[in-house]
Image (cartoon, rainbow, N blue to C red; front, side):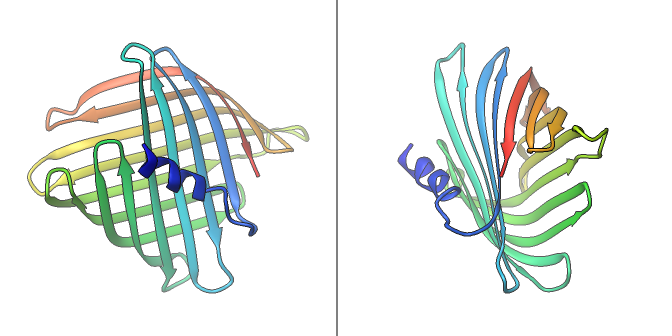
Length: 204
């Protein structure tokens, strides 16, 4: 757990201007806290991190994971990327590409990469995607929608995938609330488990 908590604390320890989002989610099977940190430095560097801490009601198990990348722009939106994914079960360093774009009320972060699992001792391919769309409804509210997709493959089989879905409203002070879902798929048969609930969050 210590190897998870330390990177999570780093998400909020920088005394620099950055985009930070925190969301709390309560579903029928689990509760979760999600944190996202995105910082463009004055140079061509960008740091991106996403971390979750979840609690499963049935197993009474606490799970934590963090995904973080250091990115270097080689064009307006494309860059090269190096990072690491850390969970209770595994540590997976990665190297690949980054596509980061924000235009008006739409933003996307896309990180395709080669990965190495210390648990299975295998190389593989990973893809992390974050999409947010917040069009204006009226003077008081925006529509808030967010999709996070993660997938990990070895060169032999599908390891695991997950999606975090949020749909609701956002106030002018960047307070978000609405309905949410977490979905996961495992194995080559893509055995699927889904959870549904509500969320509340804040973007700084």
